[in-house]
Length: 163
Length: 274
Image (cartoon, rainbow over all chains, first blue to last red):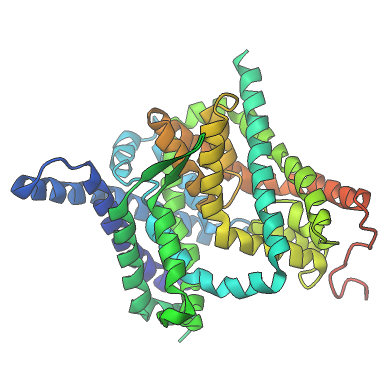
């Protein structure tokens, strides 16, 4: 994907996230009529800086991935690291950035992402049919095994550390 | 014009995604009691299911071409999620560093996958496929490991791809239900922090789907749990790969033989000629 294509899609995606986040935030509204409309507009307005910060972090991460000669890590690794660094308490402006991005609900952020994933998923059904239900069943057991295995170890280590 | 250009100009996809997002957010979060367990339904599950339903051939809404075009874009949608997850770890950075031993050691949970998955796979009649299917939860780096060691057009390759596709199709739904079920029935043993770390072992969408019910159940711990899950996901991307190569793959090789699969491991095509 070229950087131009990426930028175009990030903007399309940003609009989806903005609308999704706005609709989701309405559940918390308790006022109606003109007052409700004003509160609703305020919700939309206060999520814009957070979205711009996220776009900035993405741009920074993609840029770092571009200039670093070693190509062993994908751009998302730099994006998540940059997002982490700029919000560590003590980093210049970290409190302000954290306050802005906190207006973007992180679970709600996944709604448009999973909408795209859902629209694309039909192409994989054929592969699943070909490989059969047994591998699907093994896959589900594997997810349970990994989740429970990690949770048990994390729990035991956390308890040991508490002592 | 390449596939990404066609996808970007395919307004049907973007309008559909927007409509699904709005419907899903309008429905909102609901939890249901199911016996001793509680099931948390979150908007991302609705938007995924509705999106998958749009692909039903009888609706004639999406062609195969549309689906391939959409999938060329899915990778970039995760940029937003990863940027947001980074900003969740940052504010709790020192708390996360404090939990580092647990975050690193829980990667050993992968061994649980092997001991649980390989016998079941062999019991279900899989042979060498079992190694690829049950040595890890088959995310992108794990596919690369199998591809390099055994090749992709081999039983091992079929195994890892099968579980990978299972993850893309059912992963988010399944992980969300599993996490609500375990969290609501076994919170006597598991602390929410340990469960949050376990959420980070899968793909980014599996992590969000399994984290959401925890956040619903412990709203006061929202930020801490999200930070731990994201940090665990970052760790899985780094040390998880080494853990797979040096530990869970050799154990899977040994265990599959113990379970009675005697065929020799496959080798990638071309490696014999050297």
